[in-house]
Amino acid sequence: MKKFYLVLKILPILAVLIVLAYLVTPGDSEVILEKPWFGE
Image (tube, rainbow, N blue to C red):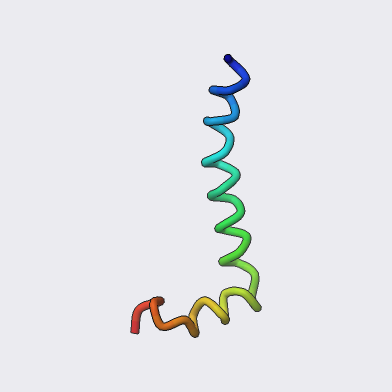
């Protein structure tokens, strides 16, 4: 069961890293900025 809890702690961190990497990538960030739900 300890491994299960360890995975639960690691998953959110991985999710944040993936989102940050997605936002930092120039091509992807341009696409995100063009989306209507991104403010403006």
